Length: 318
Image (tube, rainbow, N blue to C red):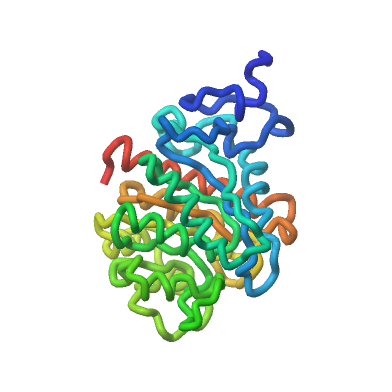
């Protein structure tokens, strides 16, 4: 292998297709994308938020971005199946590294995450964010709404994360309560998929719980999601615990009875053309993972979301 092929995270031009590189070595950016803090020509910035201080159960998701990047090396040798295009040839996708915050000043962290997102979005660059616990979606949404206005939320999860919270806690189970109360999302045009925990107050969200998903085909599921979202600008947030712990054990709050990895991937692919403006993949907790199966699924789902974004914003699909 030519020497210049190694360490694509540093040697690869920002634009460029996937190319083979030993999966067991090299700098582990996401899918070997160029590591850079320059947003001058970037169209999608992959960024990590290694935060897990809002978790209500098992910690460890601060290690999620690193694990997802490492697992993505298994995906970076060829075009993503079954897509007919290589997203990295179509749009300038960079790895922007991680959001910095001072863990000793927890009250300042939400603003630090929002400011990190604002910097990227101000460059007219979309974000693919790797968590971290799910709380990070709230400060990310705040930044996205400043740019795009109130959004539809496409939320994959075992939990609604809308538990009543007038106290304003930094908590990964209450952030979408605040998203509704702050007017960040439009619940009647938003949908939660895979839910299988009890919360009687839906706050107006459309809920396609795990039972509904298992009782319908992927085609029926994606058609229902499309009917709810319409062509509205949409933020996609995917908590890995939406997937059953048989397929994704490495997470802090696993719940049995979830989607299979095949169902999750087919659903994302079946949403091709939705008006996606932002996306995150959260709650991968490497201390509870086995053989990187959760990190690999997280990396694959993130890759699929990038393809979704490119299909809409490069090819104008709807």
